[in-house]
Amino acid sequence: MGGFTCSRCGDLLEFTRDQHLAYAGLVSGSEQLGVWRYAKALPIDSGTPHVTLGEGGTPLVPSVFIAKSRKFKALRFKNEGQNPTGSFKDRGMTVAVTRALEAGARTLICASTGNTSASLAAYAARAGLRAVVLLPAGKVAPGKLIQAAAHGAKILKVDGDFEKALGIVREVAAADDRIYLVNSINPYRVEGQKTAAFETYEQLGRRVPDYVVLPVGNAGNISAIWKGFEELREWGITKELPVMVGVQASGAAPIVEAIAERAESVEAWAEPSTVASAIRIGNPASWKKAVRAIRKSGGTAISVEDDEIMKARDELASKEGIFLEPASAAPVAALSHLRDLIRSDDVVVCIGTGSGLKDPETVKLDPKAMPKVNDAPSLRNLLSRNI
Ligand code: F0G
Image 1 (tube, rainbow, N blue to C red):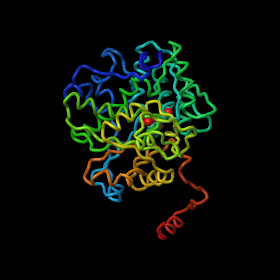
Image 2: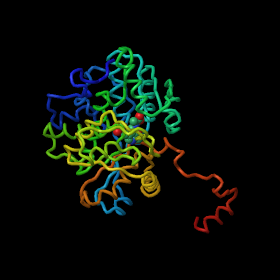
Image 3: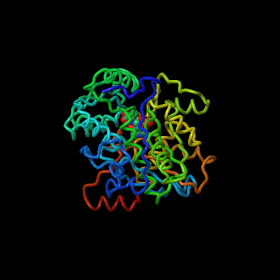
Image 4: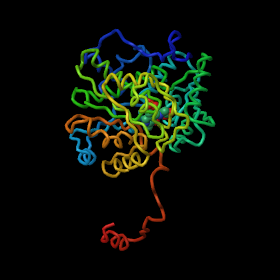
């Protein structure tokens, strides 16, 4: 079904829109917060049935503990872990799979570090289409693998990293009209994911945040969210734009390197390595759009160490009640490095891209250390010792 690249310049294709939407026009899709509330801003014919599981409409949760400890007065978490399959991928997948059905596709394919494959598997099941996912062998979090299996996707593995898998599926899909690729190089994915910007704007009481801080892997999401905010401004709905801050793990930080060196292009990293497996990507396909978003917004990209990521994940879960996977906690790990850039009363939104339930092996849990209680006196005894 095509390779989603321009035949003249080789860049990734993206949707542009000449129609201008006033706020009333933008939100007239449906009453509820969610991706299809913004149907008028999405490139799907109005008569096409939506392949939907109720994606989007995720809560924007004010931070209490982390805001206080890092001295931010208006810090919020957009908890994308509350999407149907537990990650932001569902926003793009509902639009891409709706489009696939509209275009008559039968087989949907993706490469993935895990979440895209889980999301594709669910939406393909819903649409009655075949899902094939190609994953780096031994490198995908078990929760994500289980999702893909449960939803009935055909799971294939590659010896190597995500980028090798993406190279293979891109080559095959570009040459075969019956195979539809749903990685974020597919512009329909980007269109769905941009709705996180529209929602954030609405949830903040119709204003854009001063800063959006989010993890960057293949670099589709930072491009998508920036596109959403740019459209709000193009349409005259808002005059402001946020500053975009991309966060990568220090073992997989090609975009951070390019931004720091003011380079014209991003150099691929050969062997990316991080505990945050979702963003273990050394050669981001959407690097050009991501670098443009960061530079145009006056933003930056920073890297964080694995131990900082794990500490942030634990803090979010144990002090804020928000359980995210390691990659999704990277923006919180980045906050202490951003103190010089961000003023304490700036409105800061961290995108919590995926649920912690997907990556259970990264949580320390020792069943042997759990006290056994088989009657009320032993429970009373334990409680009196203030455990
Ligand atoms: N956070 C999570 C939880 C992810 O799964 C991903 C990407 C990202 C952040 C980064 O987003 O790639 O648009 O820059 N996961 C992809 C996947 C690569 O296959 O699930 P990005």
